[in-house]
Image (cartoon, rainbow, N blue to C red; front, top):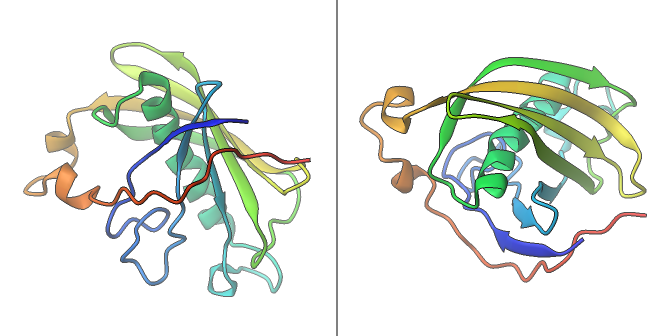
Length: 167
């Protein structure tokens, strides 16, 4: 599927923060179908049982893709939201040290709330985990005080990714 544009990364977010030594440093892309996608991998320090990623970090990625799905849908990174609820389904063990694909789409959106579907897939397209996430839209100044969102979401590094495909 064709990549239309890349979204910004933050400094310290566990999922996208480029300055967070323990984070995933995941890039996110606005796709031609209106979804958001990422290619990323968990590392051994993200494990629960040996060979498997901790469920909390799986859920964190599903949550991150939800907000970013809104940005892809609206074609803007100006709207922010806070998670109200998240229903995660763990379908298969999620491995670390291997390439994974994340995808998020908007399923409902109005001026106060939005709902997304997010999935983590292996490179063959098998769903490893998925979830439905509900958010309330809030002004960024009500979410965080004293921090300029543009200072935190400061990285936009071109990486020449033009398509994301899985078998």
